[in-house]
Image (cartoon, rainbow, N blue to C red; front, side, top):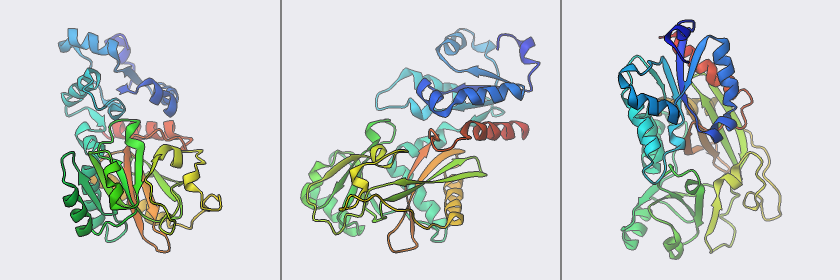
Length: 330
């Protein structure tokens, strides 16, 4: 918006940072149209904005709410763009609503920190869910110490190896399944070694928007492997196996048959989503859950911040309602 006079005709002023790819995935143009209809002015936090802001810091506009996908541009190298946005978010007035606080997002981007927080949530949840046992492995950790730690934590083979960091959009999805200790050297460090859970090749993804919207989506996943005679490490991209339209061989059983639907307790899944959301204190999440084979146990294996909501047709509307409710509650 160009002038204070123009802004006065609006109820609220909202700023957003959404990179082009995420903008398209989220259909964020629909969100902006809804803002306009509700008399909410919108400003994009782009290069032009920050160049102007650096010149005229004293005249920087004040925003009622800022929504951002900072996690989409944080990567393994130090990028001035995300550091600039982070600094800007951290210096906002306490009156400005931030969806969501960067300091609440960062623990999600380190799997060890994420699992520690999830374990705390599980402890509060009276066995509503559990986190499969896990071990953090760093660059210089001794092989014998790793094997000893796995035994102490009752982590048995096969196990799954995941990158420690979740802040690299592509590499964070490359996982390995390891079947014996001789192949542990194939794990790229630093990493998380976690117990592989037999779950009949079905993953449940819960999409969360605020405290009231929980969408449960069933996705394909890695088939049961315990009884297969496999020794070589399996490397895979989790997006290929569990993506929206995935049909990867790893999800099919030895007869080439894809997994069938599972009976689940949706109320319990919503309770899990509520516990996880409250523990992380975040508004926009997706939670990956496995139902352990031949049991009624549920395991949370991953949490992602501000997903693309590719299976939620009304995602722009839901995100808009979240923002509007917070603005009207100010």
